[in-house]
Length: 327
Image (cartoon, rainbow, N blue to C red; front, side):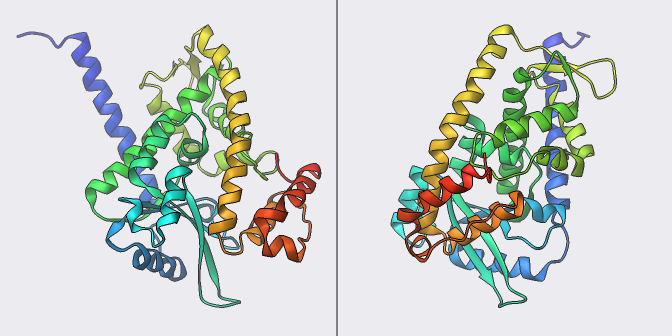
């Protein structure tokens, strides 16, 4: 009887690792929001009513999953096509520069709850996580998120696979920027900090550390499993230590690539802000609230800036930037 070849053993090991990754991510995604929340579910019903049979999945991420309730919820809505968007020209905007961002709400003060809804197709979501140069999508979904609703089991598997891919893409692009040996904490705190610098972010110093500290066991298990995927690093003999196997060319390109992402991110952020001024009701007040919440910096907008943000917001953003409200 023939012994299994080295190649076949490697394939089996890779399959076992893939199963472990999918199980790990799937368990995290369902456990993170597997609790009753009547207000959250009322917002979910609004989304289901609005997009009907074109709705494939609804994800939730952000500070809500870390226990914060004094905040807008962050939903990601995945559609089968932009034909499900009520206004055709909104579909064109989403296709040109995903995602579209909207605000929904339920109830009235003091019991009102609001959510920010980011929308794109499932196909574009999967492509962005797998192949986009910029970190906007794979930087977000490498972090823990939750599945609130899926149309069926095949969509659930696609969403889970996309989140696994996001973690792999994130890790592959962060590792060349790390030293010869590093820990799980180094991967995620360094990587999240790099990705924040590629957008107009208002997070305070140390925010990446706080994110890691909320889910250290999950990040540790995920990083260990990804070490078997040929992403430029492997396990060391010491516990929670890894050896960087990135080549010299990859390390040189890493520095340049993150600089390019920072430059690209400023342009994309400008364009997304412009688009959100059209699609997001009360978007300026939300933006200023979020900046104040993270940085403590606030500037009262004028009436013209509230009424015509796309035209008059830019001096206000420049003042906020000069005061250190965002990077």
